[in-house]
Length: 326
Image (cartoon, rainbow, N blue to C red; front, side, top):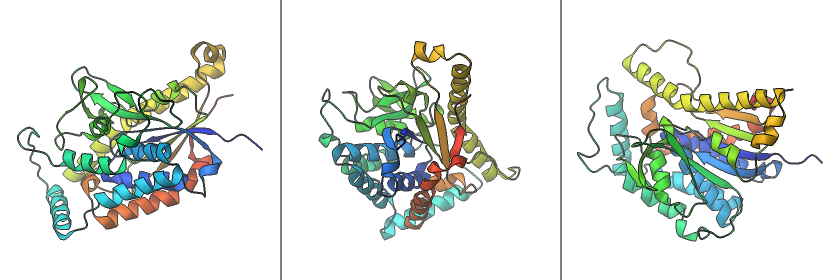
């Protein structure tokens, strides 16, 4: 029988749209698909970082079923279900639909997003149960995309480090002005969408190299019509900004494949090899930007169901976006 492909899964950020990612990961880790590949690593940014961390921690703790339980439990708890939260969520969506915006520094008030996220992460990641720093740690590896506010550029924070904490995950989600800067590992971070959305290159430097990288994309690549309203323009600006780091890294992957095809000795020198990159994209390309803050239970379940249905596409030839060169 052919060897199972060694796979690293990269999860793009997109706020509550990452419920789609949770659905994809849950399906891939289910009995229907988990014996069709070997999971080497997970990377993610923002909501993708949350999903990657939930799956990673569950796999390390007890295996695929626990990873699925954590993914589903987190998004179930995040959903606005009690009457006050339902009202607040609806009111927030209404305000964000208005053709005006008001910007306020998160240092002028106490943002509620960070403590709420941290509470849910503590409940579902359970960092105290992770292997102790320095202990032998099984796959998968974890990489979280963040942007370095003070020094510029970005980083892919690793889960194996003794410095790993839930602050790393919160930092990857810290999009201003909903969050203040997050201090971790000796500097200040913002959401990784400004640098790595999600980390791809970091997956090439793992202790064991993957054969394939699977990307879960949340921001649509294209639009059918010209954006003209203020809302449409803001939507497209956000999509382009969120896709730029990912598309640049995919371009680098394609370049590496071409270079290795032309000069195979470079693989021996630098330890790289040609890789296949597959991609599954969220099918709802017309969702507005403000829907990334929508926590309605119906919307989150809709996205998760779409993700579960889309997972099988990774095993189809049409999912290949970068492939080895002859």
